[in-house]
Image (cartoon, rainbow, N blue to C red; front, top):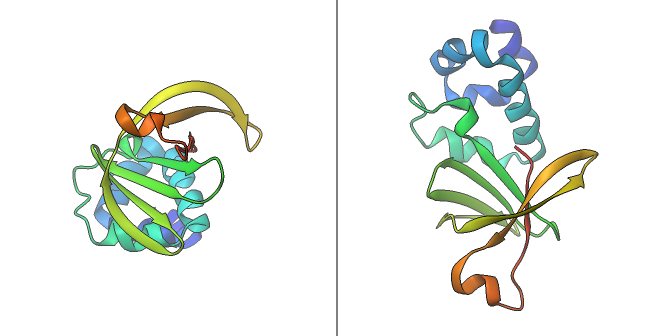
Amino acid sequence: MEELLREWPELNAFGVDWVKAWAPHARERLIEIAKVMRRFPWMVDVVRQRPMSILHPYMIEIYVARDGSEVCLSLNPPKVYCAQNGAVKEMRQGLVFSRYEVYEDKMREVYRPKGLLAFAAVAREYVRVL
């Protein structure tokens, strides 16, 4: 577990006890989470500010807007934290599955806004990267 935290210090945001609890069962998932957090460092601060003791690693979801303008982190649906132009805001998640497509050499789920937002001319599509 110490080796995991040394190699992936981003996981410290969740707390040592949380990493210790999940490392034996979900080590690969923790590494996937850390890789994405390394790409988007603002997520470390968001995670540090929230209690993670009961969060299951497979509940963490990350969405990237197809146009690259926004990245969203979902820790406890329906809340989602999105960063756009360096500003992070808390929102309600309102996405619905659209289709599968290849993104970053992997088959990924693509989501669209649901409800009235789906009809907006600027409606973004989001790819679930985690």
